[in-house]
Image 1: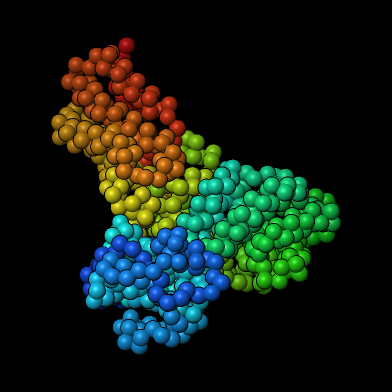
Image 2: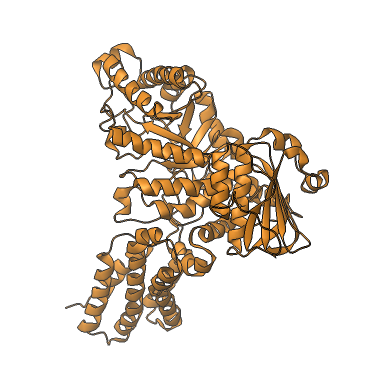
Amino acid sequence: MKKSAAMFALCALLLAASAARADLMGFNFLDIIPEPHISAMLGKPVPVSSFALSGAATAADAPLDRALKDAFGKDFLEKTASGPGVLSISFAPASAFADADCAKLKCDRAILSSNIESYALKIEASGDGSALASIFSDHSRGRFYAVKTIKKLIAKYDGRRIDQTIIFDYPILEVRGVLEGYYGAPWAPADTLRTLDWMGDQKMNIFLYAPKDDPKNRSDWRSPYTEKELKRFQAFNDVSILNNIQFCWEISPGVSITYSSEQHFQDLIAKFHAVADIGVKCFVLAFDDTGKALSKEEDKARYKNIGEAQADITNRAYESVIKRVPDAKFSFVPVEYWNENVTEEYSGTVGDILHPDIIYGWTGNEICSWSVNKTDADFVAGYINRKPLLGDNVPVVDTFMAIKGPISLGPFQRRASDLHLSILGLTANAMPWMYSSWVNLAAIADYAWNPYAYDAQESWKKAIIDTVGLDAYSAFKPFAVLNQGTLINHHDSQDLRALIRKFWNNYHAGDLSPVKDEFKMEFQAIAGIQEPILNKVKNQFLLEELKSWLGKAAAYGEAGVIAIEVADKKLKGSMTKEDYDEFAAAVSRVENRKGEITRDALKSFFKELKEELKPEN
């Protein structure tokens, strides 16, 4: 996208977001993720110290029972309680939601009765110091999400209070989820299971298993799974079901498949059937990041181009899977998965041939799209004859980049509020660092649930709190600011970049005194980022992932404090070889650490300064 067009698109997105939030004036934002569709406060928060079931929960609902025990205690379904501090949970049909409350929220009863993810919720104090949370929904998933909302509202006050509020809630995007699709080894199974539980809390409903470095999904796709490997997928699928998530399995044979080979097709189908037989009902056949032309003579003899070949084998695979699993979902990821790469020869051919029930994956204008709006989705839909499913390459940082590169902890932004009108849903491609991905993924869950109320900066704040806790927010936020660069955001750490420019302007003017104190204070703060995070963040898995970047930040801070003193001495003619050696050693300590902070801002600054300060002899 040209810069002028990009800026116009950004302005349009900001104006649309502001207008959408203005439409909700008079209502409340509850500051949880995802933000409920619409809510109104009924009074001050009330104390909560225990929980009880009022009446009966619905029968034979394993996800709901699990959610209740997770939110309110393992013995919740067996115990009774009353009196001050007790929050009682009750369930009722959608029709029982009071007309006055519905009118207050301008709720739509048609949505409440038909949308399987919708619910209404009323939380109010009783005269004896207790409170009642009444859930109104006709659907298992709606009741499940209502419980997740109560859990978030309690966590907001550290488990001690809950808002008195009424809520009418449902998602705008039907499909909302996570794609494990980076170049790198799959997450450890225990980490995947934890993320599936976490996704349930975020009201996400799809998880796609597609790591590029799982050999049997890509480079060695023809080899059958072992029993142990299938049990791993079965565990993922079972936990997904308990979180109202659809587990999807992807295979990517494009690196070596012969499209016209019956043996290759049978090998492919055998993999689909093996996964289907353990209960999986969602499948993806992917050809992204493979060649755009047929390379084998037998394929050239049968097909006019690779688009026809891929559409044909996908249709045949789809038909075989549907016979075995009639209610299966089936998706296709093309070679031309972004707009700048779309051609009529390939995308037009695929769109014409591909079965209309097959979902089509797409990443926007670019592989990693700076912005995505409705027009972008409409463009590709004109070729493929269906709405695409957005596989957004945020916050992905592939392993080969992450070893020496950045980690993404920034806001999710520049996705239009009306984009949902032209896409089936949104899946976000995570990083190899799973727990670190949660900051971005939480914000994405917030956007996908209600893009019209979405505010990138507010959601970023909520996402950090959701990930590390309120007590750790103030400690963690400066670190997130230093690491908000992504593959689509090169505009991170603007204040720090401005300070570096100010340093160089004063340095070249021969006097660092106007910037010295500010520079030193900033780098002292960076040097001190690590310790409060280690002390306050309770998620040890997250801290283990971030230790390289935390250490790198501290090393950069220490180097910066030394740098300003040595540079000042250089200008005053008093720098010694020992001064320079101390600075150079500090820079070496930075360079010896894995990862990168602020993308290239600090790295470039210290490289340039090291050369500038080098003694002439």
